[in-house]
Length: 71
Image (tube, rainbow, N blue to C red; front, side, top):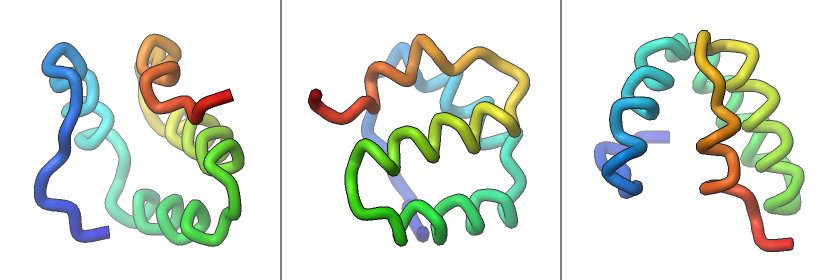
């Protein structure tokens, strides 16, 4: 998607760095393309948490609540 900067809780930086390193660029592109076709924030959240969790070797549940859309 061309991002060169990310904004986040400083405590999340090590975990997000590991996620970025573990997800191959082609998988990232496919995930982004699909997410951009979804229509609600809830759909995007569900898709991203499912897709990325399959690709990384760490538990993302502690971070998932930070990106969850409002109820």
